[in-house]
Image 1 (cartoon, rainbow, N blue to C red):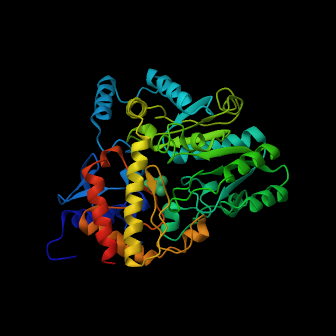
Image 2: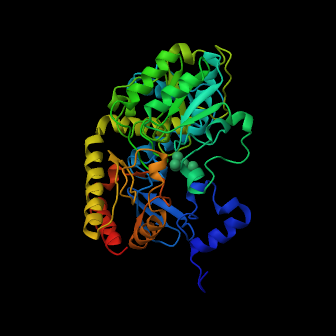
Image 3: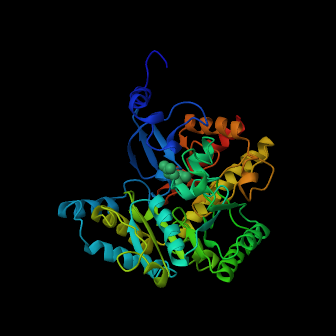
Length: 429
Ligand code: HOZ
């Protein structure tokens, strides 16, 4: 630490004394890129204000939720109005019904929906429901897909688990892990072989239809249709984890873009408008297995919390009134084209997968289509790039294996400035 530590450095020193690693979620740590995380005291639009009064153009967007930019006045007003009426009732409240109606209208595969408090709760509950519905135990997941931190799903996981070198977390009993079959993404033969090797045993297949936790990776043409068809043929529940992609890439998520109907869908992030939330929903005959109607138990003191519902409803209604998806895709393409042009000028091999407001930058000549090819990215080079961007005023996720997010607030000055900064950072690598 320098003679005059920054406010962030001082806060981090205090945090490390009391909070493991100084962070309340590992993805916020800078261990894979080096250095120490900065603290943020405020955020508005596309910008973060650090504890040391630096202004940063933010491409993390609170890991996805801030599609309208930070602290949007409409969402803030909705929270304030709800706050006036109370913070939590522990009874059904009218906003839960409004939220359910919105979700069901936006995502037609969802006939019934249950609110919970995080994406982790949503995926954990969805796989329990798939198991209860089918009376089978095994789940198929894909290497690099991250579905939160419940035991069954923390196997070959992406996000912070991969970033910090523990894709198979300690603490997950081997007996639990045996119930999870892990396959390479985008590999139809492996999926068919797994169903053949476990006849009548696969309760469900869970995947991020566009992966966002091993960097951003899109499926090959026809892959999702193949997964859908295999699940139907083998009586397994198809679960789309659209916690990241839901409402972000289209109002109806990837399933709308790809015209695939999953049996269950997991949601989070945007539906909380920046407050903690998750949801899972799908076919009524499956959802009706949940307590109190059926034998699959799932619960939550703060589920359907009125503040979170108010914020989420405001965020979803803004998506409806603004229909920002074409605009967001133009911003995404502008960023991707700038990075690719800068890399070409520098003679650097790079892959920049992008769809709408999600993107990744992999420094590799290998097309990235799964976990193995994602790992061909030059992580030390990414770390240098990350810091070069940060020094110049752009905050990317501090990991070579996270997706970037763009908001409507990036339109105009922010995106232009960010493209200049990324271009300059690449030129000086
Ligand atoms: N899904 C988020 C990024 N991959 C994780 C958020 C977190 O773990 O804090």
